[in-house]
Image (cartoon, rainbow, N blue to C red; front, side, top):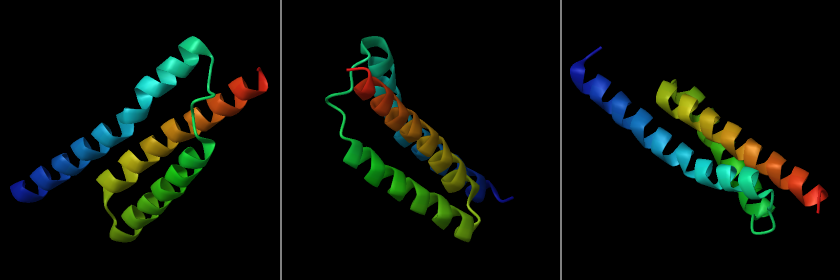
Length: 91
């Protein structure tokens, strides 16, 4: 692999990780407070669709950073959706 290609892949992975971890503070807050009334389920579902499309795009392009970081984002997004449904039922 060429050095330039490695640098591009590292940038892609770093960008994906930064994007993915944006949901972590919200997940931690929900777990601590057990409240989800301020969370938009519609937003999370649209985001999940977008992440699924990005993952598919990564598969089509055979781009591991796109695939891996978007799958990680999807896991966090699904965690948010699950917590939202669980804690809204507990109201």
